[in-house]
Length: 302
Image (cartoon, rainbow, N blue to C red):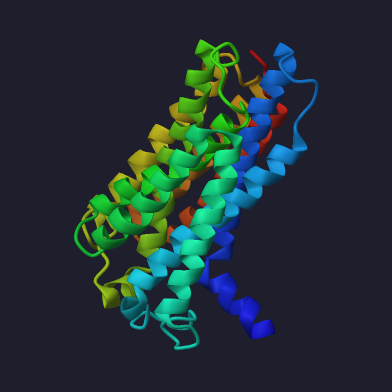
């Protein structure tokens, strides 16, 4: 039984799936706080929050499952992935496909119960991640840009889910800005995040022919792109405060965290050493949940 749970965790990439669901749930709570503040609902609808978490988990798990079905033979070549259930022979692609289809339909149905837009975005996310980003990984570094789109959709999905059936009178002009900015922060963050991971795992990725670094190798150009992306993230992360729905605490944290992020990326640019790439990578793991959590507690309802 322990092996079954372990295999399922590897199949759905549990840590990645948890991160995705976390960002969606935070955005949902932000949207709910707005509605409570406007008097549209008496309190946070925790039942819908649970539906979002379950639906988001299943949809993300399904996308990861389809990704592993497509890359089964490539996963066999890499040390990091060769023990996943399908490349290791503990699960057939047919079994994986049944699980993936079941999770995608159930997850989309659950999210669709919140509103149609949430369900449609979840379908779009699955298709883009599994059938556009996945094959592009072996063809061009543009795959990172394509993958960043479904990767940034969870905050948008969570925010839209908070508004139920999206009645026009409930959705104000500021909501378009909030939804867009939540998406944009996570979108920009993914570039230094992915490129740092690609730098660290480049030797393993090469075995499968993946081309994820901007220049396709560990060099100055890839380091420059990583550093510049962290610089872009700083003003983007200040947008909640600039647009008046984030307080000074989230602005301060975003600025400090962004400067640390950029400093580590600058050290990578100067040294171009694996140890520096690992520091950028680990910093990225902490950056986005910290900023999102503080935004939730330092949010100014509009």
